[in-house]
Image (cartoon, rainbow, N blue to C red; front, side, top):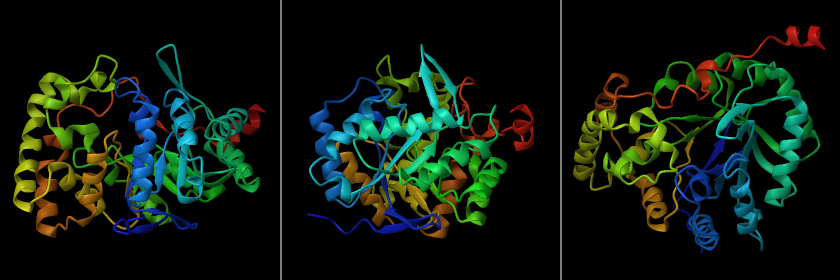
Length: 345
């Protein structure tokens, strides 16, 4: 039975409509410890869709490939028509190392691979997961535009792109959504990236809106990570930083207690209050957490409460970078000019 408590929003200005909260599916298959059982995750996906959370987020990187296969199976039997399906390409994970590709052949091959694994005729939103700084963004976008023309994808997204990269990409073909990390404790995108998206009419998809679990569980999360959980490598999850960051969690918890909601709901409500062009995609593998996340949509915050939250989680209050130095982020995502590519051809 569909639950209409999850409102719908227009993501970007090209016609894509999604649930105001999505479901990040990465942790079901990869990076956050061992993969979870397919049957349980299928049940969770169906419960999400029945509850009104219809925007599903995956990537060919998750597994690699196994998360797309899981989602493809979960959408059999009439579920495909009920969802907006987003997947990503471009980050290659081999032998413990990450690299990034945006060349046209790779773009096309990735799309064909995702269509096959998801076992669908088209992908609603196809993101470039990371920006290939060796290839002009225009070249990548031209191939994506062809995939739109062929009906293989409906809308184009970018992830971890700088403001100038977003502008150049958008000039080739409208970018529908920008996926970026945005939460109470990750706010560096607010200065340049968010205003650029708003100026161009690009929707904002906030990943890790709960600080990879920190804003829902606090410092104790670091004690319970399995050895193959990639959060073990993240600077913020190191013991000395956790020790300092726990103050933020304690204060969020105090405000949440006064509001009669959980810390996770408060942190998620803060993202929802950023505007109707923002869709957070918290990931979870548990039905009770999913229900709790949906509950965040009905938590109302005053301007005073927003300011208080922002004050306690300001940039200088958070200890540790969001990624280790071997990760590519929007800060290093500028690409060569198109003219350099033409002359090299």
